[in-house]
Image (cartoon, rainbow, N blue to C red; front, side, top):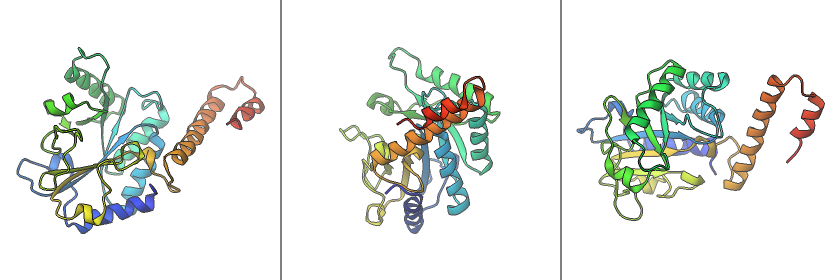
Length: 255
């Protein structure tokens, strides 16, 4: 469950449909068939890096990685993480902004996106041309927000908003949308039967859910906590030479 091996099997099933794997920029209003692969990076850039490597070197595919610049779990502008982002780009993948919608309803979403895109582009020294929303509301999805020279992953060209309680349209005659949000396939698993007859599809995955060992949600978070704790310990060891390493090792063993 949620292993790289399983992810590879999903990609093969998508290939078996005969649909072309396309980037957002390659799709027009006249495009009748496509598969879009999208990744929203929530908790770990390290896991995003590993999935990007697996896609590029084992599956020979390219996809889009959407990264938050306002995230309490990782700092995209640390020296190590900037190198990770640049390496993901060097592999041939695209990077975008994963925009965290503000709680303040009066906030100008368009201006907020533009501001964060500029900050992100300047830091990684690469033009960022796309964005996805973090936990979009019904209202935001229904707006079909358009910004000059930027790709909205939820735009009507790539995504069909459904006004019913499911939010997402899974009508196979329209744009089919599947997502592994919250470590489960909320709108259906990408099985051979599920993909049959689909012509246009966007699949969203979250790299923190995927690993070599896989596992259920609880096991995955436990392993993720261990990884994040080790990242913190490594940073503390590098930055805090005045703190006794022996004492730090005691904290490292705490659960």
